[in-house]
Length: 486
Image 1 (tube, helix red, strand yellow):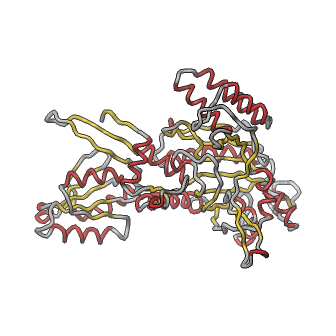
Image 2 (cartoon, one colour):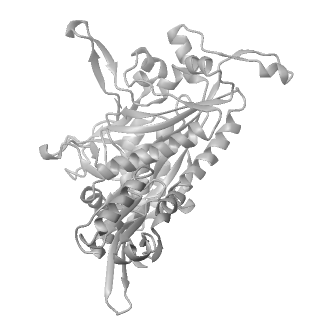
Image 3 (cartoon, one colour):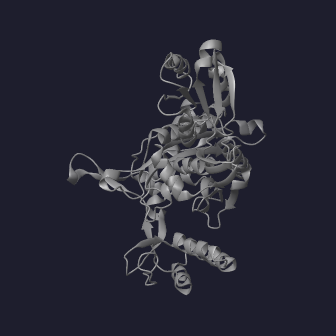
């Protein structure tokens, strides 16, 4: 196929047209950086979540899953450091009153310079930014912005305020009476729900170090610069696993999980050439090593998943603030010839944004194709090559005409298959139009019931990726789809 493109704005329009993602509250002109998942998007999201959950909790015998509440005791966030440290350096333009995250503003400038061919200037600017962020030199960051004459996208001026910190947590009140209510926070990450339940899970599950606790769920961040569709939102979903290890072994497990997680993304059909590791220049206050697995999005290389060696910071902090002993008694140390006893485990974290992964899958799958047919005329289609195992609809069942008993045969096949996987039935429009619609939705297999089906109990199966069609036995349809989607 020739002339394949991957235009981001066209992908966004495609997501709306085919029931994947809608602007939240669109009839009221929408809510910035908040999105709703349509019928196909919700199923894709669920399929990815289930695939992650199975890979973590079912295929590893030392990882279990929990589902912690969104609301947590406010001291949780004091202990974790979010109250004091969960902030980003921001800068305001005095003329437009528009606020920017400093790193995003400078990165945007660097991208513009690269597009103009000024690669060296872009790289030098980013290197200077990294050094200033590492030193928490906010005056230097402002100077870098002013020196490069980085302007506001709205006012086009360089009239900037000083750089300052802005906390990203949403706060709310809990309690029935306003005067007696207490300020709590919508969780900015799911990890803390795992840490505060460490002892509950370890004791009730009789878990032995090393072991992991996995969780998926919503998190909330008051992002000032939310952009690039569902890449950065204020309400999003995370899939996190905290792996508890003996102190001193954390780098071994850190290296294990970074490779393991990259392989997992590749198992979703993401080419290895579109994935890379990016080591953090500035480590978080709790980490002794950290990197991102980045994906080459249509708007550049960006973080998809974070791998962090968090040391014993989290459990130690919760032990201190709760005044409860959070330690592990390791009998196996004695067998290894070392004195057994209590210690606070170290933690290696894997954290992937589910919404970002949805965008990754869609970005990688979306293609506009044109080709010349045998008669010399041009044909085209828009297709989502979503891997069959996570595609929202696995099989479309299409009777050729709405008569002669063909719909009845199609409905019988539908009833046979829908217990095993998601199917779609359609009898409207010409068969070619229905194929194109299924390509655009991302359905990997289409079955056409025609008059020959009544004679020999065979059907035409069409493969989305190649558009190849072949006759197979009607009785084999269900097992064929299962074999490709398991």
